[in-house]
Length: 309
Ligand code: FAD
Image (cartoon, rainbow, N blue to C red; front, side):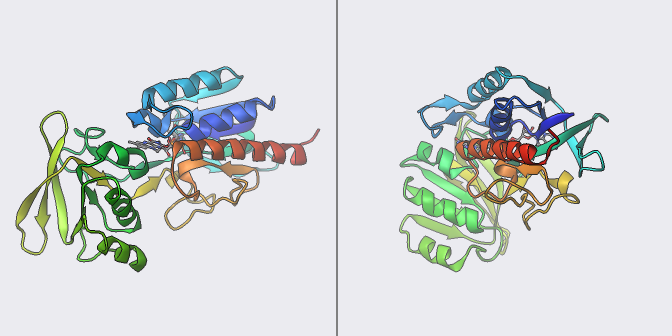
């Protein structure tokens, strides 16, 4: 059995692996895809001390760093069930392969995925104008025209944020009105370079083969279609935590995020969680890494207090 079993191999899981292994305890990482969302990222410009890098490069560096230690990396393994500790004091993680892993402590770091519009052009122009993270990609659109899709809190926050960087923002909401908090809506309406379109369904992201040039949207009240010339489209219709498999075992927030305290402890003793899968505010690489480190130190602390000598 492991002392610490980490489920998920993104920035949070990698950092947890390094911190746990450095304590000289038996550490394993089971991940569906080692690297996580970082593998899907092109330019990364906010990884502190590295002014510019690329996702696949950072993911490879994370893996090299983890492999410097005695960490059992089980890649391409999807966890399907978490079973709380029984009489033997071991927590069990069942994998889709049919195998089952046991550990004294578990760190959940299964991350999240952005909800997609599923319209033509979205996949094709991902990282070529279609973006999901304003903190990450906003500066790439300095002085340009962008759309934000989604009028909830994250969409309206993104539009306010981007309005300070880009030339013009068009916020597009499917419903007849925005769902964001009133204070955010008021701020949004006060900005001179933001237009809001409601009852609008985005039907296509358009491009010239290399990058985004615009989008088409359907006016849901008149059924008329319109085109908008743009350089970027920020999709803000929800970040879905990869926690469906945990529904019956650990306490989740309304949005499905794993509830953690300030030591990354979940509702289950010996089970910790870190990164985008949790309630931690702001989903970023450096935040996921620090949360993963914190979760590993908490797991170690748990082991020295609860394990037989
Ligand atoms: P993830 O990176 O999501 O990793 C989750 C891990 O868990 C993966 O290994 C996955 O395969 C695995 N997993 C999921 N479910 C299971 C399961 N059931 N069983 C086993 N394994 C499972 N952040 C920045 O700071 N700067 C940026 O420039 C930036 N740009 C981004 C661009 C894009 C396109 C995207 C999508 C995100 C970007 N982010 C950026 C956000 C950043 O990538 C995330 O905040 C970060 O990767 C979260 O790390 P994580 O370890 O919590 O989760």
